[in-house]
Length: 314
Image (cartoon, rainbow, N blue to C red):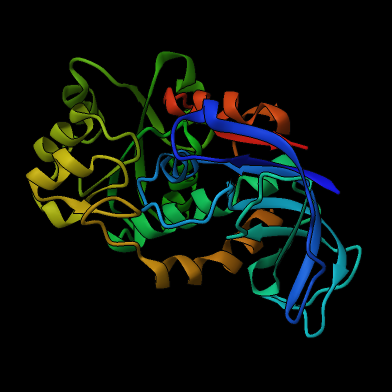
């Protein structure tokens, strides 16, 4: 027996329970992983609330990304980068039920963990990284582009800044006052959000902005983007689904009417692991919680705190 986080009904984080569960042994093309850290994301909260549909069999298991050590392998356990062995340190994405001490997963969802990443960093790489890659591909960010990133200190935003700069773009990133230095450390010009934001961005980019990428979903982010970027096909949001949809900008991810970008995101996974392993990407971990405090972690995510990924530690 081991422990996992479950919900017996759809609802809010107070539905979550820390319970004993049985872990199935790995079958064909599967591996069992001792979880060292699990990433917490807004999508986990949406799953709990039934926003992606309510067809799951209860109890509902949450979580999708993890880092850990392989403890068992089934026949033909071949991961994204090759055969998997007991003792391998790995990243798992997408692994249903990752909020657990031990989980059995499809080998195809398993990637090698770079030795230079902590367990927490490794558990926080994939979802934000593939989302950032999708934003950049969807808006064709390339060398010389002037790019505005809303929410540049957060999990997705911090990787967006780094990946855009690696493409040769020049980046302005918005953040709260306490996070401006973090944005500068990533290589962007930092500007504080709030009244007068458009003018502060113009001061940095007097010749205009080519691309705006929104990770926060506020009306301010959408309105300032529309004010500064003439081509709406180069304004993309992963959060402003209602208001952004009204304004005709590009919507990406799991929201209504958004492009999920499955092929782009899948293609980005191994390159992200390689970039992180080479030290070319820094993963921002904002806050960690014990596994049994998953409800508190989801409450924290629901409040929209920036500063990096939220991670559970079994």
